[in-house]
Amino acid sequence: MAIDLSNYESGEKYEGAYDEDLKALQGRLSRLQSLHILHNARTLIVIEGWDAAGKGGAIKRMTATLDPRYYHVYPVSAPTAEEKDKHFLWRFWNKLPGSQEISIWDRSHYGRVLVERVEKFCSEAEWRRGYDEINEFESRQGEIGTKIIKLFFHVTQETQDKVLMERLGDPAKRWKVTAEDFRNRERRSEYMDALADMFKRTHTRWAPWTVIDGNNQKAARIAALKHVVESLEASVPQDFPDPKPEIAALAEKTFGYSPIG
Figure (spheres, helix red, strand yellow):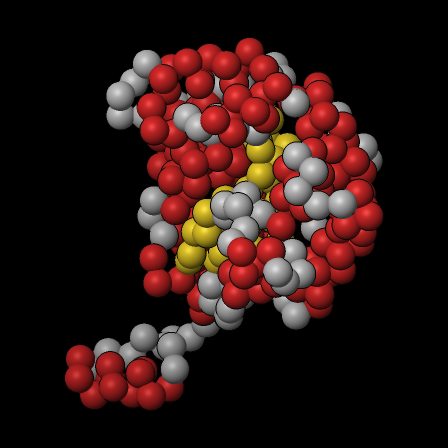
């Protein structure tokens, strides 16, 4: 099914009890992380979206109650000279999750078919080839059991401008605004074309895209966390295994209590 970004621009306010619902989702996610660890699962969460679309705020809420030993957030910036000298996917291999881990990529390998395409940081042949390379890369992760969750945060130009101006007016947030924000803004139509191609070519059965309407901050955060929670509930076994026999024996010996049965 084709993805039309115009369907994600209503910016409807969140009508629920935001604080309570956010806390409940974070609690579910914390429980899921325990199951994720116990069942040796591995998950990759790819976060893409416009500048000032709320990606960072969503990641902050997503990880607020997680055990930091078992998740990693990787902010992906421009490649280094060494990385440019390698295949574009080279720098992402060491950011993949291992057993029990959740990896969150704040921007990702999709830079090849977005910013690198639009800003001409690679050739047309390279970005066109990138679609198949990305799909193969993600397919191989699926084959070893990695769950891939891909989120795209969409905002209108009006919302983006509003957030950028608010940041410029706040000394504590002014540093977040860069010249790239203005450069990318001027090429929005080109990015829209690149996004249409990206969704068409990489919205796959094994790694589908989910678009988040970021035009209302609270609603976007709830939608993003809910999708991650529901995806993990569907992919991670929901049973807590019994304790290891040696631990049960130690508990029986020490406390006169058996945690089994």
